[in-house]
Length: 152
Image: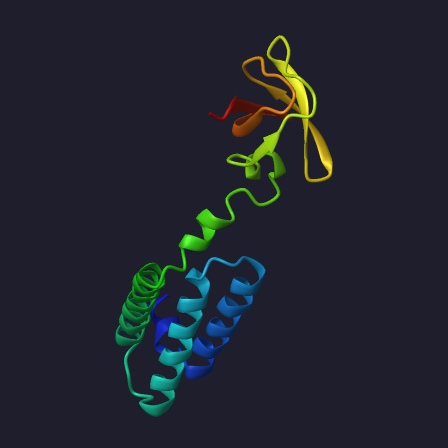
């Protein structure tokens, strides 16, 4: 097995780098991207210095992979790239995106149940009994039912 390591050439690292970059395109996680770029850097180093031992090649690959990955994580967090996830947390969850919306009742809320129109859809609502014309706020969601409370 060790004999195989003695014959690693720069194109092996280059091939591994491109395979990892293609894998990144198929399963985006940014992990494979940094490992792929590290493998390409190792191939360049080996092309420039072909006498580098396989131990140094693997050490360089491991260190570059870890440093690049954790550097990217630090930069992405410090620049707020992860905040987008919170902004789009209700994407494709229309009822959850309605929390905080305000509306005026066009039908009474009787026995804790009623309906309200928000945008182009009528929603089933639950809350305390209210008369027509009461301004309400959506405070929660239970499936397709909105929880509302009267605004004072």
